[in-house]
Image (cartoon, rainbow, N blue to C red):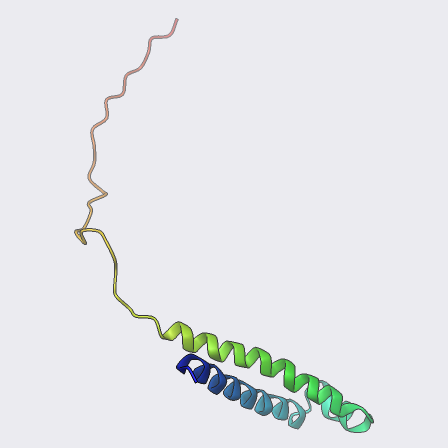
Length: 101
């Protein structure tokens, strides 16, 4: 299996694990009375599954994106002479006024 596919699968698993921890924390802390709503409904498990899958997709995407973006090489600044450019040197400008008629 290609290394990129292994990397993707590994980070999807990490993202879904983070999602499980996050949803468990939401239910344990009873945010917005969520534990009561889920535990007293006969289809509350569907809400928990939707929370888990939705957050899992987001966390997996973020996890993989962060890993891919950190893989780039930092080659430093590119181009230019790296010499300082003096921009505060005063320049004499001749001001000529026209006569009024």
